[in-house]
Length: 147
Ligand SMILES: [Zn+2]
Ligand SMILES: [Zn+2]
Image (cartoon, rainbow, N blue to C red; front, side, top):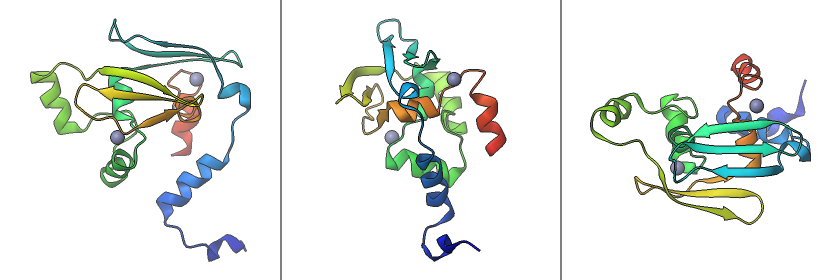
C-alpha cells in the first residue's frame, strides 16, 4: 500500500510530476552547442554534453509548446506532443507557410523562448524539456513503450 494515495492529484498531473521527478544527469540536460537554424527555417539542433545529439523541426517544436495553454489543449484532445492538430494541419498544408520563429531568445542559462510567426510566444523550452522530447531513434522507442 502506498501512502501517496493521500495526495490529491489528478492522473494527468501525477503523470507529469512523475516524469519530471525522474531527473536526468547534468550532462544530458546541458547543451554543448545549440544551433537555431532561423535563417534556413529548418529547426533546432543541440549537441549535449554527454555526447547525445538532438534535432527538431520548428513545426514540431511549435506543436510541442510546453506552455500551460498548449499543454492543456494537448491533454484534452489527446494530441501527442509535437503533432499538429488534425484540422489545423489540413489548413496549414493548403493555405499557410509552416510556422517559424520570428525571434528566438535564451532564458537565463536553462531555456529557449520562441516568438512564433503565428503570434504565440508563451512557451519556455527548457533544456530538460527538450532533452526529454528528443526525437532521435534511440530516444523515441523508449517513450513509445511508456505510453
Ligand atoms: Zn503554447
Ligand atoms: Zn535522443
